[in-house]
Length: 293
Image (tube, rainbow, N blue to C red; front, top):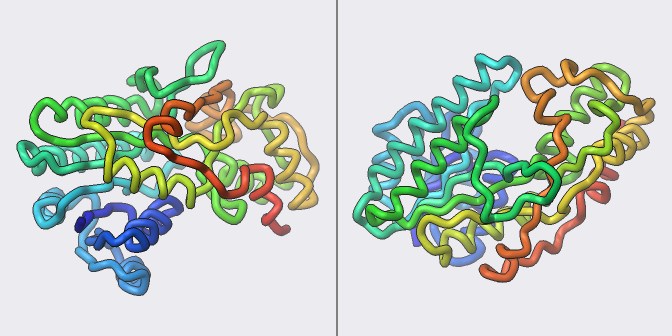
């Protein structure tokens, strides 16, 4: 299968490209820069130059391929306005990709986040939130899944708050970056709120499985750690960076502060049973021990 991949040089995208190529697929990958193009070509992918905002290029990439994995998202999350712009850009891209596949029965796998459900772990059967800072992502993914009724094998892989590799990536990575800047390994509130996590290499395997065999209109959870307490995450970061560990205001984390403060554990039991997905790589606490001051 030739697979069109956007976001193919990111924390998730690079392992996804390698996973696809390692399982007898070919990859056509969107590249926004010469640096990205070189990395993709070195990995063995064919490059299509363009950005997530180039909707005609996205349509052309989808038209040339047997399936699509959409992973790209803007790099600026620093302000509510920047985050909203990134959500809007992703939504337009998903709409263009999905429309190109209508009536073809070809697969498209989108990325979203695991939902948070008060008082319990979220499951694959729970709906995505469609309000809040990233509610637009839920709405655009829901619209893509609805294309299952129009001959698109659309699926979504829901990612936990931290996708990590060598101690870097995801919300834990933002905690680490903030700790380095502020000289304190912080956590919002009392730190008992739990975050799910997954190693990027395990997530990549699930994207491939969803592409190859998931039923139309379905959602899957790429969750290895069901819920690590944020205070425990901050404690490991503090130990690795030789920094004090303490509670800090939610505002420390900008538009993500309210999300960081939520208890949001998640299960992947159904995903493991239905798709045969088996995470094998280090847990988040183990992987964070790769950090260095």
